[in-house]
Amino acid sequence: MKGVYVLILRLDNEKDIKIGKLGRLHFRRGYYSYVGSAMGSGGEKRITRHFNVAHGKNTTRKWHIDYLLPHTKVICAVFSPTDDDLECVIARILGEYSEALMGFGCSDCSCESHLFFTGGNITGEAGDICKGASGNESIIINPHI
Image 1 (cartoon, rainbow, N blue to C red):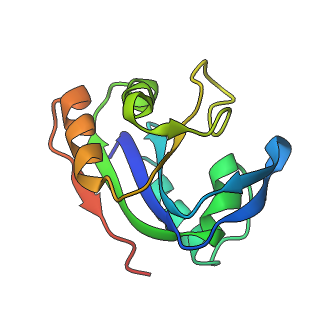
Image 2: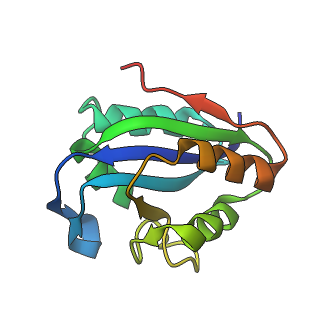
């Protein structure tokens, strides 16, 4: 199934992490929301890949998020089925009330970021944003790994 998703992550301790070509970035303790696209042929299988990277079952580093995932706890993925490319729309909305980590996850678009910091868990808000953008109910996918 194709769509767009928001990974909700928690970092329990602040730390500096090397993120590919972005270099070493400082991450504060708290919650992070990463917006991704599942529009390719694998659809929502990309979410499973993220869960596997976070849990050490996949050590391949292809995207910025792959460098952050092993340091976080994945709370869930908010998935919205759609045939429309809404990744950047959702990232812009999240950026209106979250703190963007400049340049993260957006090397193939003109967004300022696809990763956002908040002090608290915004799973509900992410679901509302995805539903508002796509017109479809969001599906919460938990990492049962």
